[in-house]
Length: 170
Image (cartoon, rainbow, N blue to C red; front, top):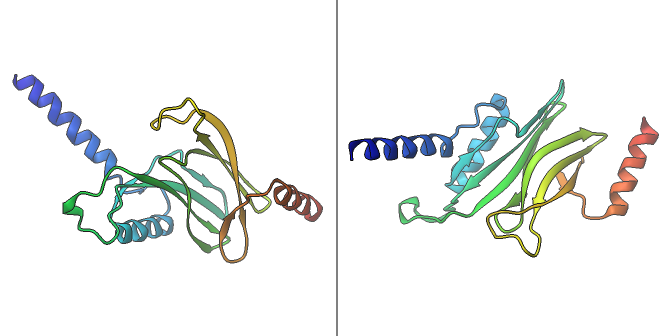
């Protein structure tokens, strides 16, 4: 009986330490942006080390906030919904967080590339036969880095145009 209680406690402690991940795997500036957003949303922060792209002048990171309470008291319980966000610092300019995925939408899985003003994220979307826990269709989503913010590119034609301009500028 004691061994069952010990194992249960160990599992609870390890899951809590993962759920309260502080995102210290990112730079101090990105971590500060993420923590400010999480404090405002009153959620649980989840970060993984593979959710980051970093080069000389570019850092892009995505992370999840689970069970956001917003204006409600967290003691009341806020559910298990989660949303994924992306934040970037490019050429020393901070770009505010943008929602890039979440439960019942799609799950961002990785940063594929950051090139020519475009961020490509690998995601899993839901097929008609998928359970709500487990999207299975691999797709890419593209985001444009402009002067003020990062925006999702919804149009294939727009994506092609941005790539073409990037090639011309060389």
